[in-house]
Amino acid sequence: VLDALTGKAGAAPVFLIDELDRTDEAFEAFLLEILSDFQVTVPELGTIKAQEPPIVIITTNRTREIHDALKRRCLYHWVDYPNAEHELEIVRRKVPQANSRLSAEVVSFIQKLRQIELFKVPGVAETIDWAGALTELDKVALDPETVSDTIGVLLKYQDDIARIEQGEGRRILNEVKAELSAAE
Image (cartoon, rainbow, N blue to C red; front, side):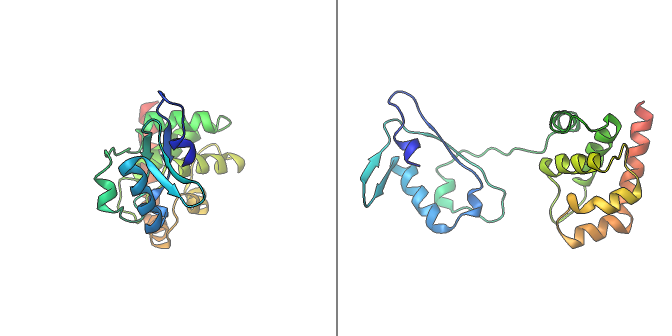
């Protein structure tokens, strides 16, 4: 916080607050003070005022609501999941040792998984983790048993896992295989 406020004159520092929703209301109140006047009072140091107003970037995973007073001081931008092509490129860069067929199947499966109603849909981090885990298991393509054995990499709630294991996963996998075969 102090680095963002005491940056060089003439150059606006960047102040990143990642996953604000994981903090408590006391931190939000503290942040509100900083954002209202771009200054903070520290008992041992006194009041520290920004030489240049910082560029403040706040991220949230929507695990809880952020206070309205804080939201009023922000511009909102939703960052959606990447499309399949972009996500496949991410997997190729992060898990370069993954078989290209496996990477395509993983991305397609997850893209379809995000379209069904789940308590928590998998993010890009789970896509990368799953591709990496499957590669470590020497898999070159998805099959029903592999999906069932590794679904916990993607889904973190038992109700979601049960839904996929009760047939939804097999349906998605069949669609993925058919679509990728048709595209070849």
